Length: 139
Image (cartoon, rainbow, N blue to C red; front, side, top):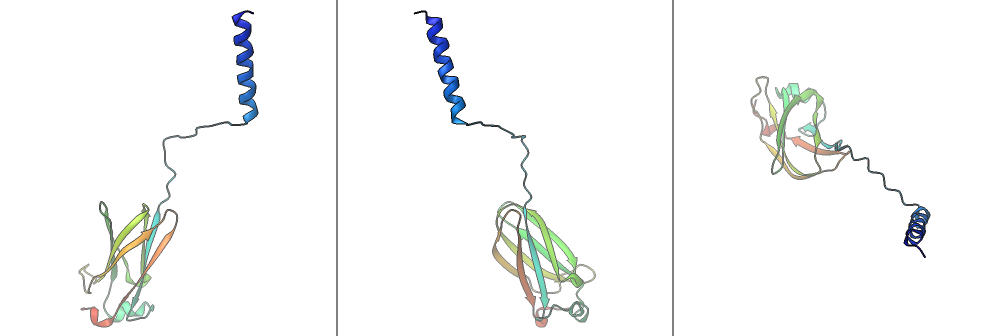
């Protein structure tokens, strides 16, 4: 028997066996991650109230939020009347969140509230509720 007939028969058996498995692998890795990130929303109350007039009553202009982990820190300031602030695009992990109130010149006028170990998951918003009693605010 010729070696060429043996090899062609063997190759035919391998191809036939491979087609029966139905296994097809397609690699569409374009090198770009499709990461949307997670977010942290700080929901603010002043003296237990979510009425925006509390901001006016206590001369509070804004809410300042700092989000940090071992390698990352971001700070943003939002309008107090919104009674909250959202920071987007965070990677999954645990973050420490500092929140304080600022006056119209951007100076801190309250104690700092620290919430540690806030868990952020991809595609989800984690809400952190923070209340500032009136005696923590020094206008």
